[in-house]
Figure 1 (tube, each protein chain N blue to C red):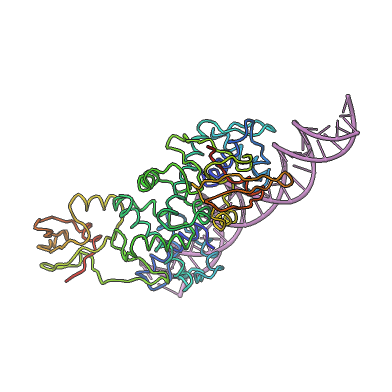
Figure 2: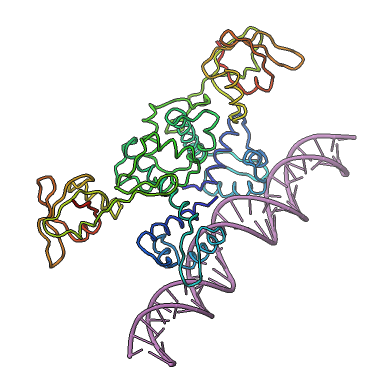
Length: 218
Length: 218
DNA sequence: ATTAATTTTTAGACAAGTCTAAAAATTAAT
DNA sequence: ATTAATTTTTAGACTTGTCTAAAAATTAAT
């Protein structure tokens, strides 16, 4: 069994590993969890004893298979709860994160299974992120950051890279929601801002925004 | 804001206060929380600093108004979650306690309000216990332990005094559920066991059972 | 290839919450 | 009203998770 703190570390490492092949540095984890590198060193030793990470001094950490499975089950819970909050309790997608952050630590396999069934076995959370199955497998679709599209390319909005309520509310304000078709009309070399077409409306989008929106090209 | 531990103490004191006018002893709290009296003394000092209990050395503790309200809000959450688990997620009434014990500590006023509405503003949990409203008021009905009924008295089963899964499963096995009409046919002086009538069936009930079943006389 | 800058780890400390064992206060018993 | 039994509190210690400051290792720079 893992403490809330241990679970948070596992989740952080899990997310950091997604785009990183080498070991994750204690500094990176510290930044992610808003804590100190020395605290991370301590915790990582504990997790190593519990065989959920492999840790070599100064070399960073990697999740073991057990670690990956454990982390995935936490992410699974987090995302299922997010779906529940949005679909059943009228939360908006920018309100769910903090609550899901608490709910993900509830320990009850039956609860997770029943919520999953109650929601009709969803595959994506409200931000477009895939929900790992019980074994920890995730159904990754090939998506690209909007910022990587070139003039005249288009696709469907399928996810966000930043789940902060500020960003999500901004998207709401601009009418950008998951499932909508987006076409790049123009890309400015100067600041990498984009002019896009979304539902017959023309929008101007900064690079920062485009860097946090995932598109499935087609 | 209160820690999970502090919340558990408040809840324990709240429940112990229900049938007790004087201050609650540290020993009683220790027993309820399965901890040591010395730990209780420490915690009770903290709670006193936070003005949720009044504590005089060797004199036990009492909840302040703030303490009562805080405790009631935890009990409210606990009972709402129990209803949710039973009504929406197919848990049986003997499975909900441990999960609700975790869920009650989730901090999100909106979540509680929405669950409440989602469930149609229930007034009782699956065990017949009243759900405090937002202000902490509870709708107490006048119920009596089955063990206090005399021959030929009857009423409706409205609650249990013991929520252990052992007891609840026993009731399930005997077909005793909330809402059913019960009549006392006979009461043995020797062991205070009862012969009762429930839905045209005649059952023999020990005093221990009768001491944990609430009846609304009529 | 040394020196300098950065990252990581260690060492020691602290807060929360708990425990055991001993001391103090209260309650019960004669 | 003392003494005995019980309850409650205190004192000191331990665990988990964190921190700061210093030491050690790694990486970058000349």
